[in-house]
Image (cartoon, rainbow, N blue to C red; front, side):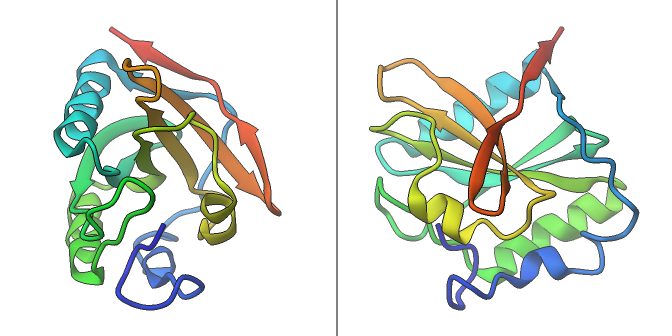
Length: 160
């Protein structure tokens, strides 16, 4: 995964003043509405067969917004997003007084488990990783926290 036009190990968007605006409570359970879940499915399906990617925003592990970002790599194995697209999302999140809760991407042909490169290049242990898989034809979403190269499954609830 690549989030800006610079190298993998230099991902500045999470060092934005906005992303560290307040002390974040990192929980072990996330919530999102049925409407947002369906919107996420729509964004991912729209990009098939290539990987979809974007940012999930919200407050205290409650996902309140989804921002699809353009995958400029045009492949089903990784994604590339220019810095200016990420900065637009940061400005919108700041306007809504939300934080980056997770980076999402899809695995069109594989399970929703972080790959070695997903783990290696994940920029911040406080920002979760959401992966939607279409390996079996139906969407399957998993959310993880990446800490020291280890991924931990984070349960989530879809609320009506």
